[in-house]
Amino acid sequence: EELETVRRENELLRERVDELREETRWLRDRIETIEAKLPSPKEENNLLSGKSLWHVVKEWLKQPA
Image 1 (cartoon, rainbow, N blue to C red):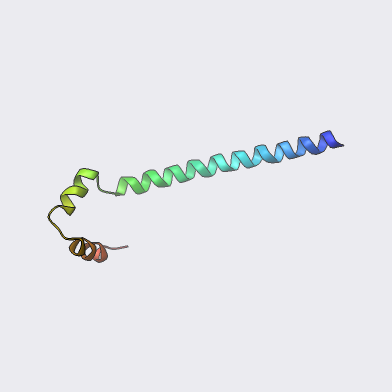
Image 2 (cartoon, one colour; image 1 turned 90 degrees about the vertical axis):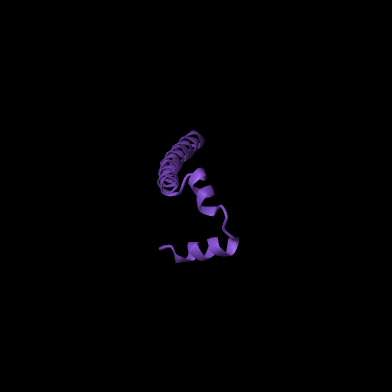
C-alpha cells in the first residue's frame, strides 16, 4: 500500500513537472513576442538622445496601449 502511494505521488509530480515545462515554453514564447516589438538598444538610444526625461515620458504617454 505504501509503495502504491509513492508511485501515485511520483506520477502526480511527473504530471506537474510536465505542466510547468509547458507553461515555461509558453512564457518564453510570450517574452520573445514582446521583445520583438521593442526597439533595439541602438534605436532606443537614438530615441532618447538629447531629450529630457519629461519629454520622453510625455511621448511615452501619447503612445497607444
